[in-house]
Each structure stands twice: as C-alpha cells, then as structure tokens.
Length: 193
Image 1 (cartoon, rainbow, N blue to C red):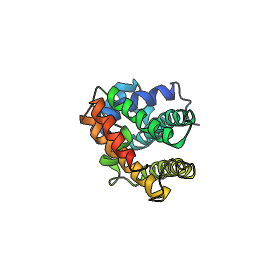
Image 2 (image 1 turned 60 degrees about the vertical axis):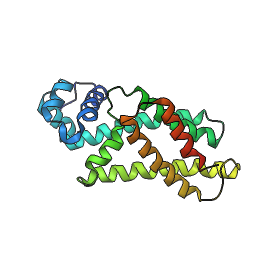
Image 3 (image 1 turned 60 degrees about the horizontal axis):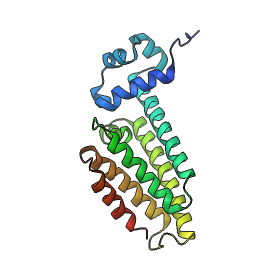
Image 4 (image 1 turned 30 degrees about the vertical axis):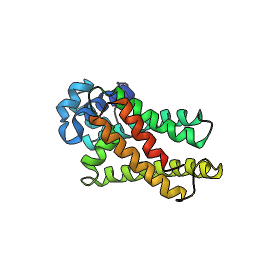
C-alpha cells in the first residue's frame, strides 16, 4: 500500500520550481531538490517517481499559474486588441519584475530540454498548440470586429504572435528597459493593424 504524503504538495512544487527555474533541469541535482523542499530523497522518489517526473509536474504547475493569470487578464479585456495588449503587458511586467534575470521557465526549458527528452517535447508541443489556438481565437475575433487587418489568416498571425512572445521573453532576460520593451511591443503589434 502506498504511503500517504505528509507534506503540502503545492508548496513542495513551488520550492522545486524556484530551484529548476534558477538552475535549469540539467543544473539541478537531487541534493538541490532535497535542500529546497526539506524532503529526503526517498520521499521525492516515492511521491514523484523521478527528477524528470518532478520537473514535468513543476512545469505544469508553473504553466497553470501563468495560464490563470493570462485568462483573468484576457477576460477583463473589452476587445481583441486589448486582449493581445494584455498578454504582452503581462509578459512585460514579468520581465521588469524579474530581478534575478531568470526569464520564463517554459521558454528556458524549451531551449534546454526539448530536443533531449520526448516527454518534455510533448509538453512543449501541447503548450504551443494551446497558445496558438488561444491567439488564433483572439485574432479571428479581432478580424471579425474589423480591429485587425486580414492580410494574413488568423492562424498565421497567431503563429507570428507566439514567435514574437518567445523572442520578447528572450530579449527581456537581458533588457529590462521598460520603455524600450514597450516600444518593441508596439512594433510587434503594428503588423495586426
């Protein structure tokens, strides 16, 4: 019979997130996770199965928090233009508030792990597909409302926006100048109008 967990799983995931986010998957040792979570190795293995499984759960946890924040921001937007601006503004705030220059954990993981591990690749593909569908829906609504032009399909603009967001997050690792980043957002979004 499996043992019952005697720790707060959400809290442990948050502690593990801090370590993985700072050091990356390959740079994080089991001892780092033991030190951060205050769990012994056997508890980590019994509860998560492996470092990789824990990392996948951490990625899911990290992504669900961000998805919740984006969903709330988009829900408050009164049109498609405001929804896209909100998405970029939320990324901008994360960049400006990232004093440790850690960047976005998902994008960091994409560059570090996607080609190394099929389960990570699968997570990234699903994440990308969800983002593109969300962006395509927003752009499609904006095109129907005649806010956005129709020079490209909603899907083409969604892929462009998704790629732009990733590049924006990478730029924001080193560049914290809010005015320069706002200008970059304006340049990216001009394509839609």
